[in-house]
Length: 310
Length: 305
Ligand SMILES: Nc1ncnc2c1ncn2[C@@H]1O[C@H](COP(=O)(O)OP(=O)(O)OP(=O)(O)O)[C@@H](O)[C@H]1O
Ligand SMILES: [Mg+2]
Image 1 (cartoon, helix red, strand yellow):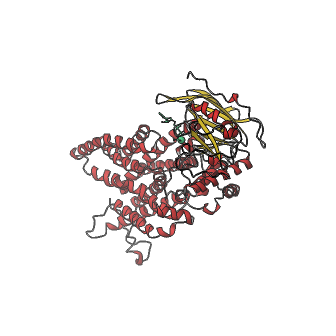
Image 2 (cartoon, chains in turn green, red; image 1 turned 120 degrees about the horizontal axis):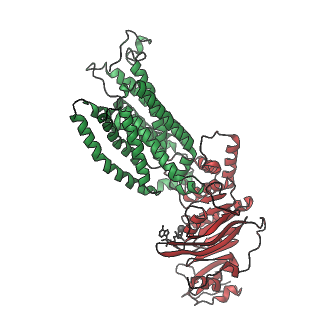
Image 3 (cartoon, rainbow over the protein chains, first blue to last red; image 1 turned 90 degrees about the horizontal axis):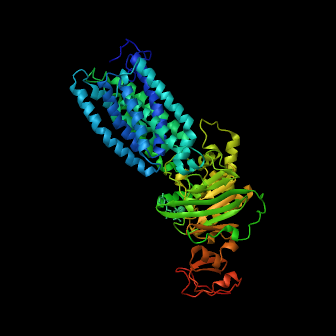
């Protein structure tokens, strides 16, 4: 999996400590950079709506249940992407249909679907690990396989990512309205049930894609992390989505770079997982954004006073 | 069911509003609904005309929210019809602005007051929208009209209840609806904020020629601005001008129970029982000395003159 080392990078030797030789000429690295950053873009944007709509729990559950799809896919001999996507869409849809319109019951519906499916995915992971020919599956499913994404899978990943972004652009205004008040949206003629279902499916696809990149354990972090940071830094919805998308993409790009470099760290030849770096970077950004939180308040004096008194 | 329904027709027909056409903006006819084995609304009917400010008054559980949700098309009814601008409710182009009692928005949600008002223009539409100067100007003007300019760039979730109401009113009115529906806007506001919201709503609605249907359990904050009242009790409604409906004999018949309507210092007190000289208000007498026994708890002593 290690990329070819070219004798000399295009950069001066001063950059060698940052860009290990071959970083810019390795095919797998290019593919990883492209798919990783695009998926992170979608995750960040979808994440803002996930937080706005109070559905972070559903995001976590989708990832947990993605394990089912990923591990199941290996048993059937298809790539993990398809397993993740199938699980994400099916489970997202099921959670939405199981919930009523009331926000509070979404958590309950999510919990019910979660409990039912988690047992099955544990079984599948067990079958994967005991069926000899698929060793390493558990690692791939749980921690992602960005450097292994190539060719056909990379194309499919990009296509799904663009589909997610396009859906978000189409549903942007009704989604925003619905996140303020479902009644308000419904009174304006928005088909709120259909919209909720569509969003859950987009979320399912997004979580599936990020599971492929950083694994099912950390994919909620890629969904929620950049959004949480962006909410601290921005005031308007578009700015939040842009910031979250940029943060996610930046962290993923840097993560790929560091993971590539880590093959040259001691002990040499034993690289660290990309997801580790991505999540560490996102978490650092979140902590740093907290530093400027006290200054971020732009509410009017009376409102701020009320807020702090409460 | 056996008792006769008080019909709005038994009252003098309301005249056309001073600054609006006579064509009704909202027609509610014979709306009935049964919920949890109880008849919540029983053949309720009334009509709203352009520019009229109508208070929907009723105690807790009287069915105000249920009726408003039917008017908004948010829930169906067992029977009856609702027409807005002469047309039955459809999913599209309802021409009704809505101010819900509360919104579920977090403190850190990245949505400024001006973003929420802009959603009032076309928040139901699909597809991306390009920013334009016209839109920005329209939003700024609407914010100014509800006196919300100073917190236009604050997140909606950080605003106080009264400030959120203003933003929601701007959101509801920016698309120039014919009808503005507000469910209990005063429920979470203190007296002064409530008064401000009532006056603001009335002023903006008159400027735009919008009919307002606003629910409340207390009639008093609405008295300065209210043209008409729909009084809801026991599933039935009486509709008419405030001075026609809020009378001892009308409300006593509606509640099927003796009710006294007292006017004290320009406020109207609706109290159960006929112990007070209930005819005082109806007869136009101005000097009512309410018995201590009939005075609802918590009200100050009444001093005449
Ligand atoms: N879905 C439902 N199922 C059963 N009963 C219901 C339902 N919705 C409302 N009700 C009942 O209908 C009655 C009227 O409710 P509604 O919310 O319309 O009253 P309201 O006048 O708005 O009261 P409040 O002043 O407390 O807001 C209440 O007794 C309520 O319990
Ligand atoms: Mg109510």
